[in-house]
Amino acid sequence: MKDSIFSLRTFAKIFSLLICISVLKCGTSSSKSQKENPPIPGSNLPRTSLENGFYAILVGKSFYPNRLTNSETREGDSEIAHISFLIKLEKHYILIDSGTSSNVVSADRVIHNWISPDKILGTAGIKPSMIQEIILTNFHPDHSNGIGLFPNAKIYITPNDWATLKEINRSKPFLSKLLSIERSKRIQFIQSSLEVFPNFRILITGGNTKGSIAIEWLKNSNQKFLITGDECYWIEFCKNGIGLPSEVAYSILNNQQFLDYVSIVSSSGTKVFTMHDPSIFSSKEEVFPRIYKLD
Ligand SMILES: [Zn+2]
Image (tube, rainbow, N blue to C red; front, side):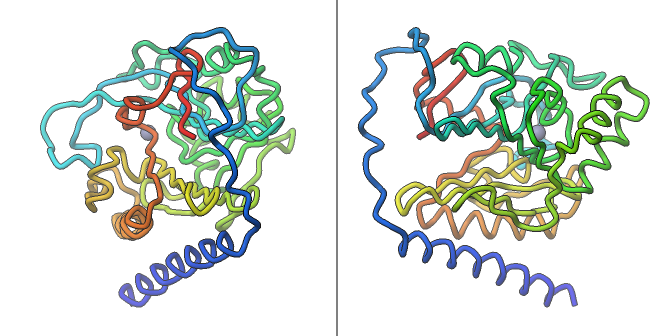
């Protein structure tokens, strides 16, 4: 029975990918010019606004045990980044994970060199009220506890992870913020795979947490992105099929199925990003402090 579920799910994921690829091929030829934007010579140059595009926001870094990630080693700690992604399409701003409203993630974890994500965005002229949508890849505090910084944002989250987020905060002041967001009907529950805008889809993965998700953006036939959430920490190990350890996975089976999907799409040109791998910053331009242009 498990084998048949595995086959069906894998088939469904591959089938949906093929549909998206064919849609892109059938679409109008709008692959014109990402190259119109002149290069910015160096970082931290004063600019009045951010151009349309896809960005990584570096909220801070911390040290994290390798045994809790998809590392091939179980010993020691590695420095991970805490990343949110920003998509700007004209006046439409979407955040993938909110970052944190404090450098303290939990009783035993602190983010060093932390800057509040609203402050980082502010340097690019983006006010908190301008963020219309926040997609939460999972309920963990380092991904979700900054949602209160953005007063107008609709929050995309699965019902399972929203319930867990409330549960883990039930005796904390943050619960009242969550309930206030809920009362203001700013929660968009993700019940199944969902297209937020054309060719930009939320995929339910359910390997990391019960309601964890990934994001797939098939921008055009040459630019395809997959944001894994915490189904993977390290991009290269992810592509090599190394998944989460059982200690931190909600479902090893779901996680491994997602990695199968990563393998398929990355081999056909999709760029893979995780929420914690600092390697994504090495070759990207810091167009504003802590804001890196990915595309
Ligand atoms: Zn994480």
